[in-house]
Length: 259
Image 1 (cartoon, rainbow, N blue to C red):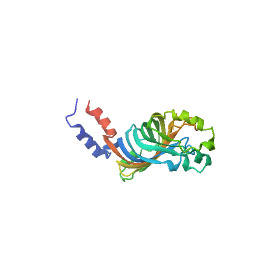
Image 2 (image 1 turned 45 degrees about the vertical axis):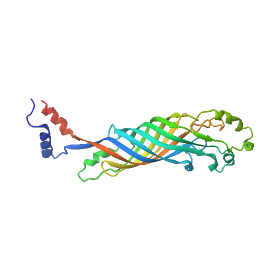
Image 3 (image 1 turned 30 degrees about the horizontal axis):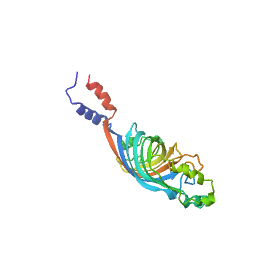
Image 4 (image 1 turned 90 degrees about the vertical axis):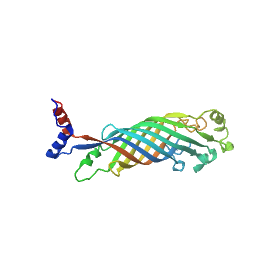
């Protein structure tokens, strides 16, 4: 038989007499905006981590859903550009080759994000002394697609220096169409500081693995089989929507109230 006393009034009375916290907070959805640096790596960079001189700026937007207090699923959109230029290096052969490219870049991706230390930091928000765990370290991995449109320039190639080596391969690259879309695997790490219960600042680095050597449009005349890719460096602000719900008293009361 249902009680004639309203459910929420009973819950408040129980809370007052037991001294327990009637309400708890947990994150549900978070939205973020960031300023980003995009760094290409591939045939026109010195290492797999790119060259700082090639960094280009852009922005990112994301929406995150918390599956648990330490694990979330995040959808991302990034907009920026990539570039590479042999001439910026001191190596003689790069100076003589002087290949360059530039491309706009858009990325849509989905990643799973997890607190590396397994902290349930939102649990600390209910502490009576008001002390919070504000710092967190997280990692993420996922999948997505990058949309690019590379513009290439090999007009500065020293054909005498290279002889027939690269020169004979240029016609193959000239009819090679750079990828317009490629599958990417984002993997990265970040650090976050909670300004308040709802606002956070974050800094993260995300490496993009690809399965193509045609991101920059140079595939045949570079004599390299390594895949191209890029890294995104992000600094941003996020806003978190918190869900308020009753603690364990709610479950006990529901059972009693519905009898």
